[in-house]
Image (tube, rainbow, N blue to C red; front, top):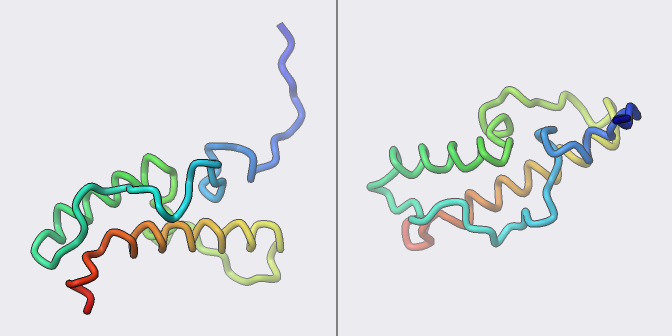
Length: 100
């Protein structure tokens, strides 16, 4: 059996934290119950678990930091997209009555 030894583009590698799956979109529900002010501890735990499964928890944990746009344009764009995706997942599951 022969394996392809060509290096994989990191953005096409599903294990790379900045890679987005085609099914990842802002409307995807990552938690069942929105944050309502009294459920922060359980809500944040569920959000962290969901982001961990999607390999995106490093974006909120501070371990995946891009120092500047000049480092690598492709990685910067990928980081921006992944970060925006995580931000939308979180914002979509905060009770809007709570934020008003």
